Length: 332
Ligand code: AHM
Ligand code: MG
Image (cartoon, rainbow, N blue to C red; front, side, top):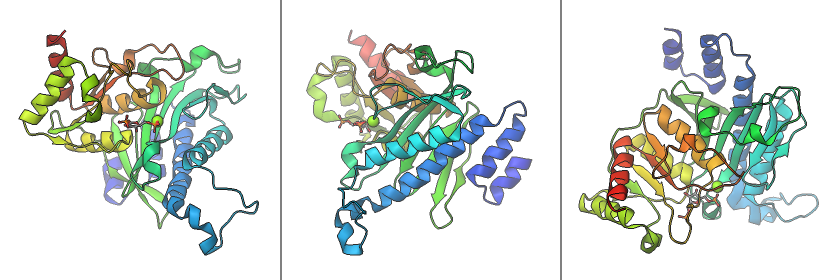
């Protein structure tokens, strides 16, 4: 088979997208181009993240910028890079970004797609050289192409996503995405400037032994969740929490585990954002055979009511997500 052959010789992201497109002859190629635009911005952000630690000693190697301005923060830089890639590409009509309060209307009426993005998630980890990520979610607009963008184009449930993915800037940089036909992961080869298919058809273990939650807020958990966490300890599961959603999610996807950002008495809707954090990872999770809920409901079925709305998130191995829900329903 064609794609099998390609894998064996080392297939780049571009090539993979092309192969996949031949698999779907009716696709116009615009979504493929959009994914390539995102990958290009990711390469640039990767370069910036790698240099981040050097930013403040710019003088030492002669790279203070012309205006002598203070370096911009990396999350701001990432936002600029992704905005530029998405607006120049021509496929997108509107963007929702964690970095912008309002919908960004690109005034590109012929753009078919809407993108929700967190350009650089895990901001508290940037300054300490720990893994961070980009998360993106792609929808087809619902109003006719050619007409002005409407709020309903942006406020769609996750089930309508046509693609989603993330970039993990970790010990290696990876891009993982789905278009609803499984999940594929690509690892960046910096000396060649290319993403190579390294994780074809990713499948999450059904069950796992890792739990990832900020236990510092334990006192604010509901009783069911407290009981579940105690059960994880009884079973001597590993506690792993980087505090970068993409990194925590990615590890658990590969190894088997659950990530929880619950509603707490202090943060009744949790912390994470539905449109550009939870939805995208939920789509990946489901495509890899894992599961994502808000504790009760499937994440992808939540009808958004505001751009930056938060949702509790339970995501990871199916058996574990089901298990914690059992604990919580018992204690109600
Ligand atoms: P951010 O969008 O401000 O970077 O916050 C999102 C991050 C996630 O990456 C991470 O999973 C979570 O916040 C950690 O939150 P906490 O420090 O409350 O555990
Ligand atoms: Mg974020």
